[in-house]
Image (cartoon, rainbow, N blue to C red; front, side):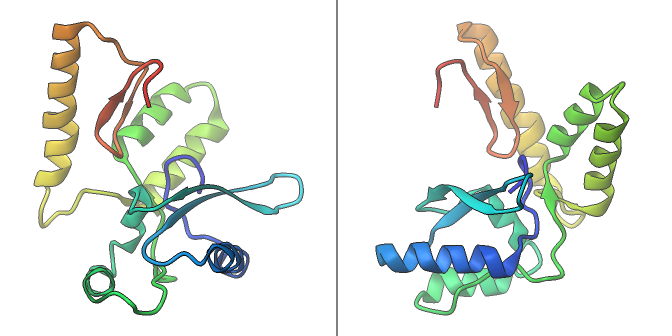
Length: 169
């Protein structure tokens, strides 16, 4: 995983790594992994294992029925995002990256490629309300609460809809 994106992964190496890890620990159920690829040799490293769904579930945006069946029926085959899935991103994260990449052409180009080549994680033309509620209502309420309490925050995490506080989780 690169940054906050659910990007297509290198299936042979990541699947082999997951099968080995899950098999050795005899894990069952739903687990989500984050990976990082070494820039020098391209080797894949598992950096996080969540015993629950995490934001990478957005990679299944075009296979919702299969995902629902996997959760409800259980015991089925391993479900991976379709090869046709585009990388997902959170628009507000990407807009912030674009704003802060002024003077850095490479970052600007990469940000534009993400937006135009990927899919926004929450927004759908047929149902824009979740996107609006998370980004405008929920984040707005959190900011207002912070103004009232004065706790302070270091950044806004749009993919899970929270304010990240210093010394927080």
